[in-house]
Length: 235
Image 1 (cartoon, rainbow, N blue to C red):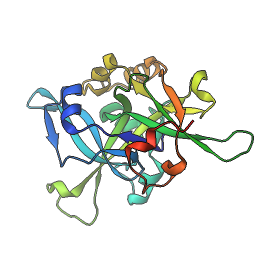
Image 2: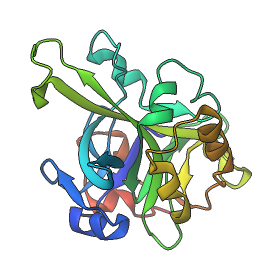
Image 3: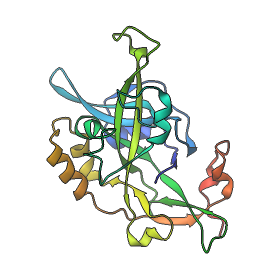
Image 4: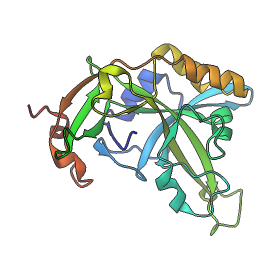
């Protein structure tokens, strides 16, 4: 799974990296310990007067399908299994029509050897470049706000796809985020790709990630811990 990640680049850097044309919402502070249900940044493409516009905006991490009864469901949907994402009711509509990228520098996983205490690892690209997590987003109608024309009515939420970890990473955790290569970002975001078979083929074609990993301080387990030292190797 992906339960904590790092998002330390500023909006300007992300706008240049992804060729973003429009920013919606306030800039978020850098975070070295992003946790579920927090507000995060997503990138999406959408049609506007016949033109495709790339947008950077904020969303709550934890998907809320439009039919969710309350916000509690989101905490259970921080990840979506790539193997079933086009089939599961919570994800299949978003997989076809509301795909996004969740930008990150790396993520944390915990492993336990021989039944001992869990050890946190930080996984990242060897060159420390941006990771493009394949994500989905949804707009959930806030029941306490009656006017559907009011932007405050709609709560933007997102989830991160996961897949079985390749052998070099499986000793840490059996799942890993689905990470898009730079050449696949445009296809993943393309609002014209809506067919179930097309989306399934695109998910299946995403290559395994090649990541470096090292042990980090157990402080990453505390949401209140948030500083650059969290990603430093401790051994």
